Image (cartoon, rainbow, N blue to C red; front, side, top):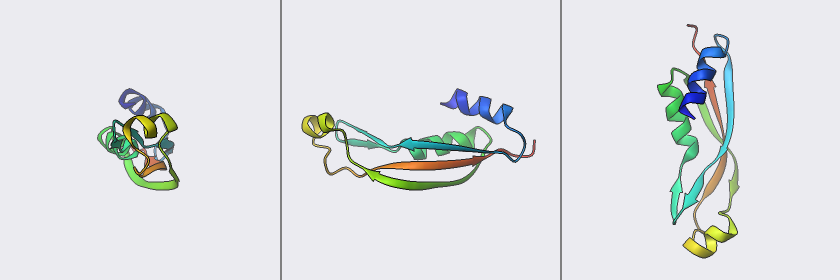
Length: 87
């Protein structure tokens, strides 16, 4: 994803926005905040972070719930908005 964000920063016009829809995940009972990780990567790649917005709440997949007991973990689908600078 870092390579993709670097290429997006290179090819987008100045002041253009990149919108990314992504879901958080859980593995072995641990929530992985994919949206926040990608927002940080975007900022490190030179984008301005305009926001991370929760679109909806999700449940862990059935096999994850049975195997790891992740039924109570709060998962979400989020929209990340990044803006390319003027350079």
